[in-house]
Length: 431
Image (cartoon, rainbow, N blue to C red; front, side, top):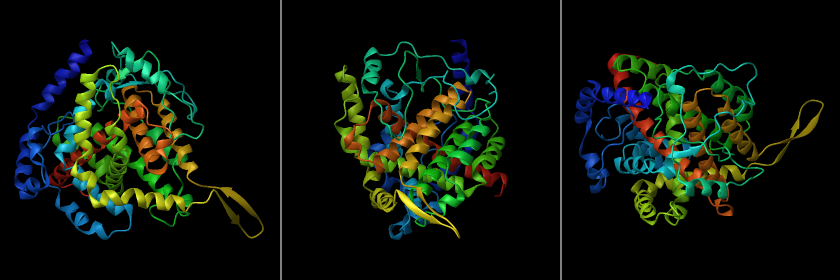
């Protein structure tokens, strides 16, 4: 309890940081009539969603995105569409506010995660995290109905997109342990992801289509990594210049990482559009009609958001599916003296997706492991909704919760990235 109060007091101190005044002045200078025209009148009723540092008042999309918005209608690549979608979506305070409000409900914030699961991929002795910020305690009490629902919905698919941890008595509340800087270094885990799980350059060359599933998977991994980095930097230091330098080192100096962050956001937002019909009839709180009605009201508002009707977003899923349908399950490989059949196809993405989720068991920071697993489950659920027939097996609670939680994480990360780019420019840092 004392540690939670200390973390809460530290968060309150950060909220008064002088950076807020400078960022607010920047925002006032670039806020224009475009924002008023773009946002629904009801947006003023909602507070701007925040990470744990002061948020900039909502501003119009930055100039570097406006060209993408104007030209993306003629684009054939999902990459260009994603740039346009992220520029519009991250500036929509109504959507982000609905997502932040939903995260406060227990049905979206509670997850049963096995923090004692063994690391199955990395050899050698794993160094335990010795920082207090890594430690998490199970939530108490956990609604019995929620636990029973997770037990009932838990199934087994041999070729699933992800296998989340088996439900147990230990549930953790993401609202009690916000994503941020803990001091833990997970570079060795990410190195394994990129070296062993992502597709190699040679494999990616097999995808002549830039919308191909190999590219999509690798960019989703990179985009989520960038999002996690943004949340870490957001809580890294109270010194603005230090935060700007750390953001630049981790993300900003690598344009591909920034663009992949936008791509991952657009990918999950596309999945939300695919799932919205089912979400409108979804029962979130089977044993609490009042709570279920409150959640449904917010989900319905989210499902009716103008961004979900944007032409760019409508074109994402068909382009991705069209590229995946062209993939064969076996291809004939030949060299000067031999030839052989090599298995390929979309199943490789499902296999890798399961491996990424399992690899988070190698993370020795409790808070990092929980947030990483939930975030990747959200991405895996998005891939499932886009590439698979989701009607064959309805989404379970943890999939729905992870999808919306991950979308909120990505949206606020993009907003934070925008702010950091302003500070990077102030500091005179260059790529």
